[in-house]
Amino acid sequence: MRSGVGLFVLGLLCFCSSVFGQGAVEAQRGVLIFCDDPSVQKAVTSALHKFNDRLTTGYKLALFQILSASKAENGSDSVYSLEFTSRRSECPAEGSKPWTDCNYLPTGHRAPISCNATVHMTEKETVTKQVDCMIDSFIISERVPCLGCPEEIAVNSEDLKVPLVASVSKFNTISNSTHLFTLHSVGHATRQVVAGFRYQLRFDMKKTTCAKAEHKDLNDLCLLDEENLELANCNATVDLAPWRFEQPEVQAECESGPLPTVIRRRPPGWSPLRNLVPAPSPAPAKEESSEEDATSSKPSASPSVNNHPFHCPSNPWKQFKRVQPQIPAEPTDAKAVPSPKPSVEGAFSDTDLLS
Image (tube, rainbow, N blue to C red; front, side):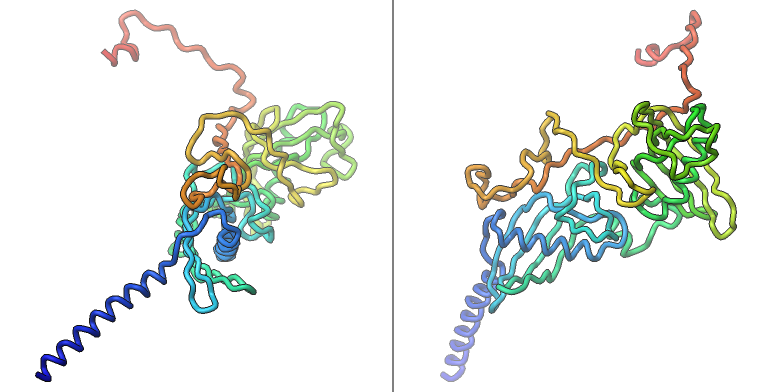
C-alpha cells in the first residue's frame, strides 16, 4: 500500500515538474514584438555600440535591418532577444564617432552581416549581455592574424602622412606640368609588413598656383588654382623603413583627371590627412532592385508602410548603394593600344576552338 502511494506521489511530482518546467521555458523565450518598436531600436543601438567597442581594426558596423525581436520579463528587467543585420560603415574602428553618425561603406560585400544579441533593459539603464556578428575580420583577429598580408587602413590615418607626401613629391618630379600639384583626396589605402612597411595608395591631386620654376617644393604659398582647374590621380606603392633613416621608395602610375569615385574631399584650410570629411552623397540613381537595396532612409513605425507581421524585417536604417571597385588606370605612357596582328591564312583562330 505504501509502495503504491509513493509511486503515485512520485508520478504527480514528475507531472508538475514537467508542466511548470515547460512554462518556465516559454517565459524565458518571451513573446514576439514589433521590430520598429522604439524599445527594440534602443536595444539594437546598445548592442551595436557594445560590439563596436570590441573592434580594434577595420570599420564600425551600422544597423541595416531588424529581423526579429522578442521580449521576456526577468524580475525588474525586460530581456530582449534580437536578430538583425548590419553593414560596415565609413567610420574607422578606432575612431570616436558613434555608428549612428556614420554612413555605409560603399565597397565590400554585397550581403549584410548577420547579428544576434541579448539586451536587458530597465527604466534607468540598458545593458547588452551578449552580442555576436558574423564578420570574418573580427573572428580572424581573435584567433590568428594574417602575418604579412595587406591590411586596409583608414584614409585619414596619420600613418599615411609620410607615404602620401612622398607620393605627391614623386608626381611633381616626374610630371610634365609647369606647376606643382597638392593632395586633394584619398580613395583607398593598405599597409603591408615586408622589410619595413609597404603602402598601396589611391589618391588624386589638384594643380596649385606655384610654378616649378619658382618653387622647388610645396609650401604655404601654394594655393589651389581655381581658375585653371586641373586634376591628376595616382596608384602608388611606397616602401618605408623609418628605422633605417632612408628616403621612401615610391613607384607611381598616374594619369590626368580625378579619382573615378571620390569618397572623401578636402575642405578649405585642411592640412594633409587631418579633418577629412565625407563628400556629399550623390543623388540616388535608379538601378535594378535587390533584396538589400533600401527604398527609404529611415525605418517607419507606420503599419501602412511595412505590412509584414510584426513589421519584421524592419525597413532598412539607411539606403545602401554598393560601388564596384575601380579598375586601376593604365600608365600615362600607354596612350595607344596596338592593333591586333592580321590573321594568317590557314592559321587557327578562337572560333575554330568552338566548333
